[in-house]
Image 1 (cartoon, one colour):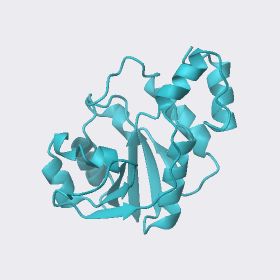
Image 2 (spheres, helix red, strand yellow):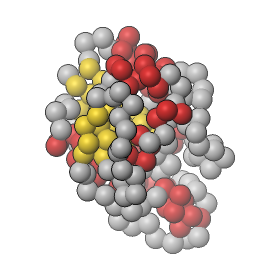
Image 3 (spheres, rainbow, N blue to C red):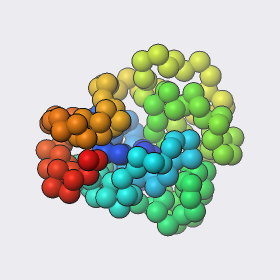
Image 4 (cartoon, rainbow, N blue to C red):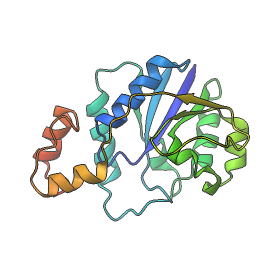
Length: 189
């Protein structure tokens, strides 16, 4: 089975994330897409992060009826901050019969040389890159890259958190059940 790993803070998960995950699950040769909730991204500040277990639960709510998508908390038991190379090594050992690939936007791919042991990643794992405006792929760094023309929504989790804090509606930005859970638990206030 070929599994695509879509890493993210998902702080919170939103419609843009879900469109990418669903598109990759149904328009590539991958059998499943795991949305890997990262407790702490070493390249991002963690001050505004909701607790990882709460973010994981929001991802589960968002994808609960989609058989090709799965929420993963695999990084919760690994050392922090989370480094993709360590997660891939752990997954490859834990699931030796699975093939893993990475899913990322072209903006993230442009920064891959900043990742720990990126050479190992690009040599050993295919990377499915969805195009983001203003971030063209001009270099593959030796990776097996599959460039995707996925539908894009210009939604950011930063804006969603800001709107929630300001008491504004985030309807259609996040699934209804996720919005209801965020409101019921006063997340991002």
